[in-house]
Amino acid sequence: MKTKQKNAVATVKKTAGVKKTSLKVYFKRNYDMYLMIIPGIVFLILFRFVPLYGMSIAFKDYNMSQSIADSPGVGFKWFRVLFENPDFFRVMRNTIVLNLCDLVTCFGGSIVFAILINEVNNAKYKRVVQTISYLPHFLSWVVVGGLITQILNPSSMLMLGIFNMLGVEPTNLLLKPGNFYLIATFGEAWKSIGWGTILYLAAMSGIDPGLYEAARIDGAGKIRQIIHITLPGIKFIVVTQLLMKIGQMMGVGFEKVFSLQNDMILSTSEVFSTWNYKMGIINWNMSLSTALSFFEAVVNFMLVFIFDRVAKWLGEEGLF
Image (tube, rainbow, N blue to C red; front, side):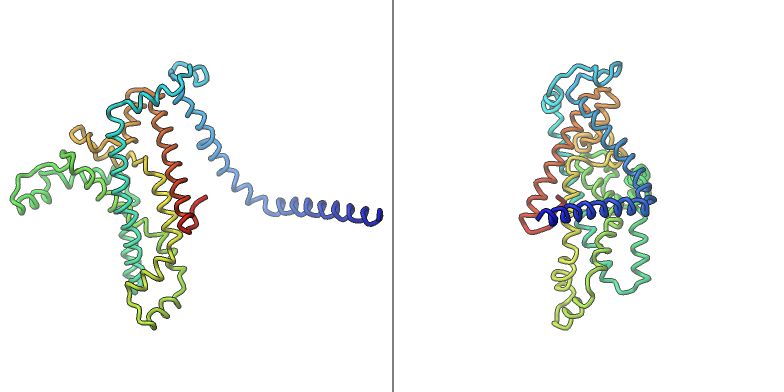
């Protein structure tokens, strides 16, 4: 009995030694791969984890002449100031409305456009369309905002022709608050729909062509093929992208809004990102600005978590 126990212990030690040795050999063989990971890890630590300490400013009466640690703590004072601000709910409304508009037009438009491109049989024509639709993505919003401003200028040839054709007095559409949602949404759609098709087209390329062939034999038309084959084939990508979009519901791109914003339309164009810039950079109220950023991050996380649970409840993969 004792001999068997000794043999078993020796076997365990030997096995453990082999695993340790094999792991060491594995690291030696793939050290170059791990060296490539180091810059990414350093980037995450320096620009993602270290700045988290700065979020404590939201709970302090921060003074630029003092360090964060030396600034006196004030609890939830700045959150109360934020929520009691009469502009808070107006700015939140603008942020949510713009994100919902982008969700419908850009997210939905990318799926529809990807399906349309996927149905094109002419490979050369498909490449040309894809290339042209991708190009606006590489333009800065400063450039896009300048183009939109110049196009909508009432003295431009295009707008003069449109106003004359409609028989109305020329007016600057960017000076009317009610037009901002439509203009910003149109600009975002033109800039991002083409680029947004990449993931969906990649997912569609992985669908078995035999499924389409079988559907055609059974008499299914294009619409039925899209509904019963294409959409289920890209369902996972659609759900994942939707969750990521929902996780950005409290944030709108600063460049997009700021490049189109003016004092006449602040009632509809002021969003959290521009409001945060004005509080933190222009008014130098870092504590209030950080409190707003903290609020955005918490709400975005809660939205992602809730909708991820809903997706799993409906039988989808989800993110977590």
